[in-house]
Length: 276
Image (cartoon, rainbow, N blue to C red; front, side, top):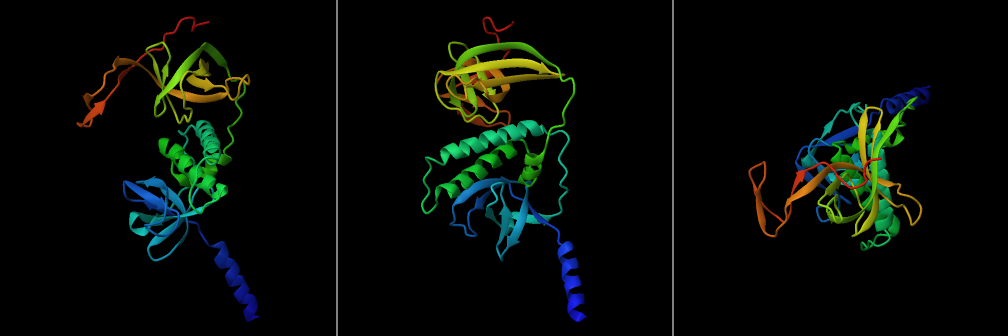
């Protein structure tokens, strides 16, 4: 009888177990592969972000990253918190999913060339995957704790969705800097969201259309020669160059002086034969 009661107590105890979470309390911290300050850095975490905790020792919390790997965060840099796992209604979940897919593809590609001592290709892939996906989530201000909920999200089907094409144009673009492309032969620069495409004189399509009441702009690259322009990235802004000289110094809005080679201003895209 005592053994039977003990079994019931154990079952109840297991059912009452609740997942634990930690929140980062410092501006920018390192996520380590192992619980040691000499262990390789696999990514960065930022203030207010929440992570799934799956263990701890005297000095470290272990956290579960999107790849399923366990990594480590120093205890003094985080605190345990309660967590409400509801997705925010103002998040563009479909776009976040798309950017995560692009990050996944890039991690798979880079893992073929990356070499890290004592790690095999799968382990390297997981590190790059976590690093790239964390950057995507951080770009949207989304805590990594939401990763699986975002992946599992299915966009509700909208009946009678109307798509009205405004313009499209085939261009050649060159990668200038982080997520910034110049349209070759024109004074226009395109800022994209989470684009890993590099190179010069890349064939691309610019699509502009309304989807219901939303105006959409995309920069799309070929997925393979002759296979169509389906590798698409949302356009955040379009700029034109105001000044392009070396050794420029600019005063930023936060009162800091910084060197710059290029000064841009927001602009309207005007290309020949763009409109239908």
